[in-house]
Length: 114
Length: 112
Image 1 (cartoon, rainbow over the protein chains, first blue to last red):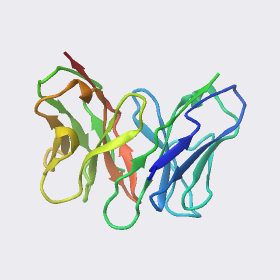
Image 2 (image 1 turned 135 degrees about the horizontal axis):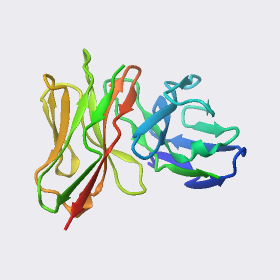
Image 3 (image 1 turned 90 degrees about the vertical axis):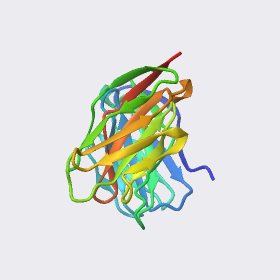
Image 4 (image 1 turned 60 degrees about the vertical axis):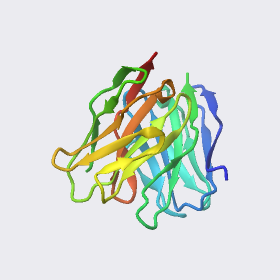
């Protein structure tokens, strides 16, 4: 049981380049999330998917797009990277049934945009 | 909308001393609260959660937190810390549709 996996672990991009961050979970969770973590700002929600086939904007969606490929996979795309997108990105997943509310996190992707 | 404030950005303590990390949340009808821990270069893992019931919640690694509705607080405590507790700690509150809103984080540094 791998939990939540993310690829790549590290990435360096030049301004204007594009890339896709991959996330997969094997816990049969309905909901998946993308966060960014910046010093002193905690985790901020970029996009989330409450169930397969649906996606919604979070607090900081500008400059990002997402795809819920199937129940397991939720990808985050940067179409034209900017230095302000230098951050650590975390994917998470959770059940939507019952009252658990707990989110399980991946190990993160450290992205630097030069 | 729900919000969370962690009152200390950094907390240095000596090994084997007690520690309290403070968290205040904005008031709402129903509140579900969490503490997560992030060890260096890792993702977040759940320490403990309050959904309902007893206001004193026990978590992993000897941590506990007390839900105080009148003070809108959910402070995290440990009676005796170890070097291995060095990490960043995040308080979070559920906001509709199972979204979590996180505080800014508290960096706990344990000195020998």
